[in-house]
Image 1: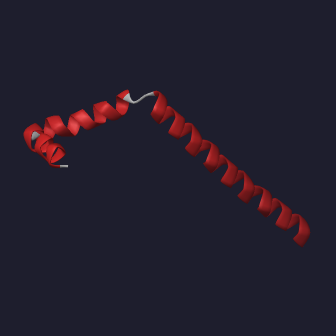
Image 2: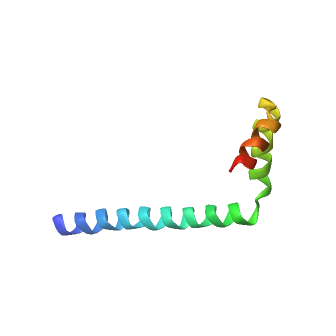
Length: 62
């Protein structure tokens, strides 16, 4: 009983780890393939806060 329980528990943990790694790799690939949603999400806060000049000055200082 204990051996089979350990095998089942280890299998579940391994499946979760592999699933997390695959999911993170797919998300990383999707973000590189489609940079447009990131640009849109960056433009929306700038349009809401409306300080494009201060942002440009901060970029020029660096």
